[in-house]
Amino acid sequence: MIQDNTRVAAVRERYKAAGQDHVFTFWDELSERERESFLLQLESFDPVALNITYAQATAFSKNTVIFADLSPLDPSEVQSTLTATSEEKDEWYTLGMKAIANNQAAVILLAGGQGTRLGSMLPKGCYPDIGLPSHKTLFQIQAERIFKLQELARMDRAKRSGQSLDSVPPVVVPWCIMTSGSTRHQAEVFLREQDYFGLSADNIIIFEQGVIPCFDKEGKFLLDQKNTIATSPNGNGGLYWALRREGVLDELAKRGVRYAHCYSVDNILIKIGDPIGIGHALETGADVTAKAMPKTRATEPLGMICRLGGKIKVVEYSEMDPGLAALIDDRTGESVYRTGYICNQICSLDLLQKISGILQNKGQDTLPYHPALKRIPHVDLRTGLFVHPEKPNGVKLELFIFDVFPLAERFACLEVERSREFSPMKNATGLDSPSTCRRDLERLHIRWIGEAGGHVEGKAIEQIGPRLSYAGEGLEWVKGKTIRAGALESRDDALFIKH
Image (cartoon, rainbow, N blue to C red; front, top):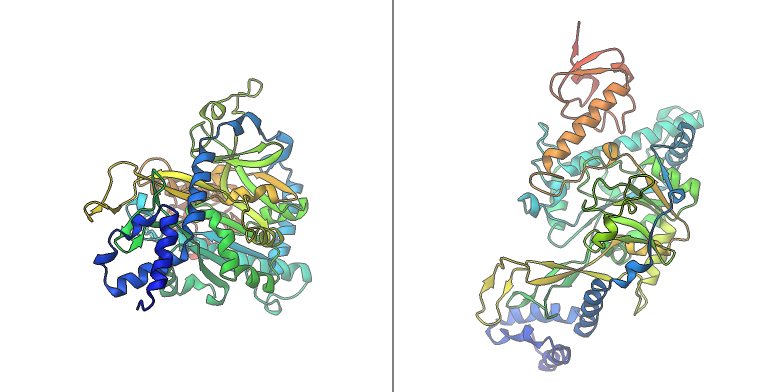
């Protein structure tokens, strides 16, 4: 409990000097326990520094000068899995699989968001209503893909070394899951109750991103309770702080990891630990290989990979100048700014460690905050009542994972096929919803059957279980056969139709 009045006075003075002393509006109404918890939160923030952060973020968002020096990537800067030769792709795959087999690859999952836009307060990874008869969640699908990738890499290592499979030690691809304060406990309990879907708990690292206060439109802190400043997760760019703060970088270095595949939880088609992407990074010597794809329309909510003053710049769709986004190249008929960023990149551990060091410097501007106008529930200072606003009333600040890309000594961009690698789940209905994710997964798996020489009859396949095939391999047994639609978790599930 609070014993030292000078402690309280010192904190109040700090907030008064910063023009944020309104946070003490209800101090006299609080119990001793409530005051103590509030004081601990207040001491964890620097109100003067946060004022500067808010001012810089909102000023930058209004700065249109940057667009005068913006230019699209040159086509020569983008390689593509669609146009690469089979020899090039085989080389990338071989390099990547060798690194994975040697335990030099990890995956980092950005899983801090809740499924609020889906009508759920669960972490997105736990969302159960994608519509698959198996009721598999995104967490389960992704865990099973890691399991299969480890199995394939072990087989590859045995083949390359001429050893029997039994004599080759298990391959480990650490799964590092970044949660937020609102999702960590639920994610941990869910994964533990599901026994980590067959993965070893020793190779799953769950850590938490930081938070930052929410502001009203005048830059004042909002209260979530009478004794709590409203906060929100600090964005996917909070990854870099969290990796260092929670010891994840040290753990990966100790394990001998060289590259980490960072991705967002909501992409149901994600190729986790993609050997081709890792191999591309190795072949090009890239610190960052960002996967990308052409935008389908100017207003599609994807950031755009560009150059600003000669340096790599990803402009978030909400910040892009609409006129530039709509520009069409008369020679090709395609968008000038066409390289869509999909929050899917392979980063060297060297770069992640370099970024971590830079962020320790006060005054660093490598990773700026970006403002987002939101509806933020809060305590009304006049009435003391909790308010759910009907329109945006405040600002949340976010760090973007891609703002550090200019630090890469070698940046690479790898265009991938949308229908094979990208189908996000963001909305309850319509585009980018559970129904479109289910559709895209079904279409991809029917395509795999066709590429293996088989045919599907009836309704679409629910899904080919990741433990059966990671990316369409191992389906040679369907050649020349017609399969009745259904879920395929193993070869025994296949129902063949005789003609």
